[in-house]
Picture 1 (cartoon, rainbow, N blue to C red):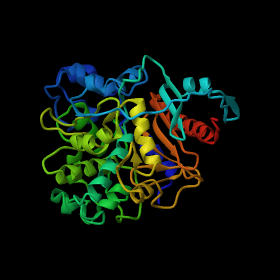
Picture 2 (cartoon, rainbow, N blue to C red):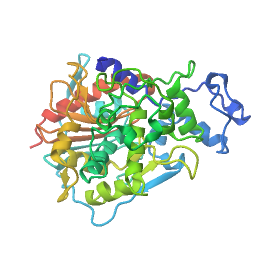
Picture 3 (cartoon, rainbow, N blue to C red):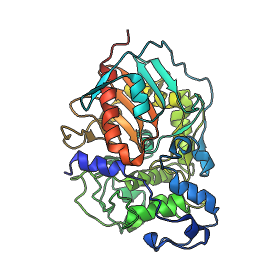
Picture 4 (cartoon, rainbow, N blue to C red):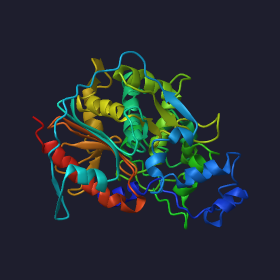
Length: 416
């Protein structure tokens, strides 16, 4: 098995474009040689493509991460009915933490780790909530790969409703288009685990572009192809079920699976019906859409946006074993399997369940998104922490370690 350090390094570099494609080349409808064979620019305005290309840059990402509906077509995950109550009993967050031999305060942490907003829940109650950089309670923030954890819950629900007969069925039973690819013989459970063995290195080096970089450009910058379509071209690399390797394409395939079993509906509508409405969400969520306008669908690999409090509601539902607001979303058994490591954990880096990261030497686990998005859950202390951030790309590895160090301290902190 690859070490989790290597895997997380790849994960943290996922979806990171380079500034190597010049704006001038895009304006002239010319393909940059660094990204040859990806096709000419689409009819989408060049300015919009340029913003998409640079949306992760440290100069703009504090804003772009809560403005994704200005960069992409979207599909709403609508709320309805009464908003579920989140009891708030704020107390001073008098917690310090030690990192690299230095002691820091909560204010230090917020600044050092590029925080847009953060919320802490203890025993189901909000004890801390803070918004920075003109974020507001109604602001919907990109979750990036925290989306994967939402998709995992939706797959669990679809299975328990009988839409998916068995998680041990071949994925090709539902998506025969994958029969001639590396996904042949891969089970739905193995896709959830990211043990598919499919060759798709999550590397976005645009000086030496591979399949992932090409896919990002086509689906999310130019908007000319669906992200999941690349799965039909991939080959077998490892025996399914034996090696964990983080791949956004696996989650895109899970989204494709959901589309196939929803009787003509779409993933956003299903998420609204099965999660957002019974959750009692405060605001509508939304998915960005990949591919061409009118053709592309929800980017289930990393495209869901929601408010700080609504991310917290998701976290508390999972912390409760799949139950919240008087509603059972998915079985406790599924939550346990989803949030425990499938393969042995790395003692320093933790492991991976069904689209959830697990923490080493702890029962804690987390949804983690690109450049500092977290829904961290410690069932032992009934702690839920949501952090929405704008990590600079070049600092991500260190910032994630520091953030999880702080979360561990918060989990142990007694708010009473």
